[in-house]
Length: 115
Length: 113
Image 1 (cartoon, each protein chain N blue to C red):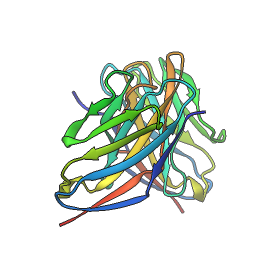
Image 2 (image 1 turned 90 degrees about the horizontal axis):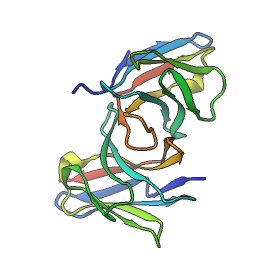
Image 3 (image 1 turned 135 degrees about the horizontal axis):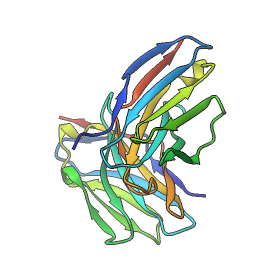
Image 4 (image 1 turned 60 degrees about the vertical axis):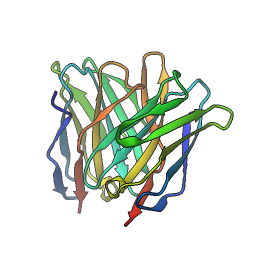
């Protein structure tokens, strides 16, 4: 069965520092992987997705993630943190059977950005 | 294009009551999924509807049910509410395949007292 593990429930960085949020997945089939962001009292916004094309995926707001099959990882990075990046980030793997499926989410990582 | 909308945004109910939440997907999207988000369990998949049929279901008791209308709008119902049902309920839509990218609404915050 598919699963996702996000290492670190809280990550704190200084403004301008590198952001690295870790995600490891388990999947019996080639995975589709996603990163979503959730701001307080809002729904989830898709940051980026991996669907078996390029292993380095660029998303919105300067975020990118690299799919590493050998490490079963899909870590999210941003070179320089901004105060507006403070939010909760969720990694998800698609649980697909044929043409149907749903997303399985990690527990989330809360990112704090210090001025 | 308008995003996914959910009504109401906030709801307070008493144990034992029932509740109905509504979701309007992005225009043209035929798949609607529902998720429950709690601090303890995180985001958990409830069910997915496609063309008015439940196509996929998570591991929730039968008190949780849903339906989809011909215009793709969806409702979910929770009967005999329990305190543990307090959560943010998120609706997501996708064009056809819910295993691909989904677009989420702002959620309905349900508080059961």
